[in-house]
Image 1 (cartoon, one colour):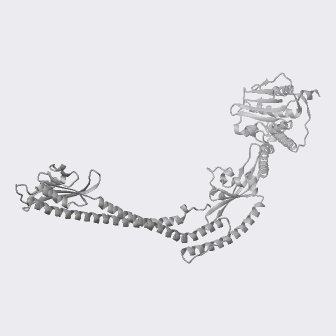
Image 2: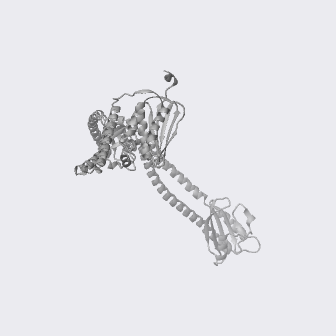
Image 3: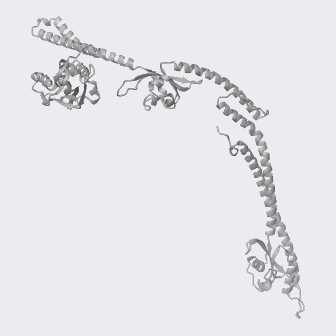
Length: 608
């Protein structure tokens, strides 16, 4: 586990939380303080301006009410008003203007001097004060984009007759400059407080996180299966109690680990010495363990198989097989055969349950039963086939013998026919027994081929001639044989038996008016011989089975025609004994072709 950096540690989180709480508190206090301070400064400023306005109103009332002589020795109204404005001009007031009832300026204190004297003011609050005698005030920005406070009040003479209006502009920059300075001081104090709080937070966080770091380090040590270290206990608080619980957990884990290792060694020894394969999976069927025997049987290394699904490793159809239902099946035979070899495995399934009887996994025991199944299958097939083949003639013979015993022997017309059937069935059983004995000798290699140099084409013609003499007129034998001499080294009697079986089958299954074709050709140093009929054909999935013992594509018809089901099996044994191969091609309703190959003799050997 990687070391946790400071910026990802819980210590930094403590500090951040501590600082955030402080900042939130400062923010709330500063917002309330700044809003109150701003309101207080604005009120004081407006009161100060109001006092100046009151003084100006008193002085202006006296000036407007004063009687002046026409000799010109006294100052005019405009001069006196201008003088009053100049005297009462303060630092905060940046502009004072007095207008008459026609809104024309009669005195002004701004930098423009007397330039504006006589001009008419169109300011809205001035018009309101002149026309309606209502005072007004507001805050706004001037042309220099400075915030100013403007106020307009009506002016009355001693007889309470409105004679004009007073317009004042006062700068608020001083107020907000003062507010900004106070906020800056407050911010500096806040930064200092946050800095001190961060330092204190680091110290406090260290006292909390130090035991946690030690427990984290101890957990990493436990993950490495090292139970020798303990965590220091610094106090009796919650963290101290957690450290004590952690040490107790370490001691119990150490004890449990020792027991687990002992049981694991015992289990490993048992699994390693088992001849059967054992595969353990979790509740989802994912392989967690398999021993060497299982690895050998499924041809998968433990590292490759672990983590895969059991149904995939055993080649089961996951759509048709539910892993939870496998234990109910008890056991099953799984076919691992390929095109070259037969390999069968018997798998037995069982469940593993936890303390609450919930399924936590599965155990599969597998064993190689290839030879056992092959022997058992061959035994069952042999017993079944022999029983079927012998039962038919024996049943027929029994029926006819019972009929003869019951008096049919006295009937000179029926008795000979019954005896003929009995004789035929007896001969059929004799042929079957002889075929079985021949196959038995071939299986035990208890026979010897009497090979000789033979022109196979001439030999093939000779065999076909014998069948042509006895075949019915409804079946045509068509020879497509070359005029070339093809010499093979073979046992003529055995090869005659092969052709006899193949051609006899072709004749048996050929329909009336059918044609049987015979071909022979050279193919890659071997002689390829084929016999093709136009019979009912054989389904594709059954073509390769016709050379098995007692196998018949149409059993009812084969027995009716007197076949034993061993002819093609004998033919295959003989061809293979000649280092050849035999196979069949067929399509239902299109006939069947039996092909076999024999090695041709070379010129050098022929010369010998």
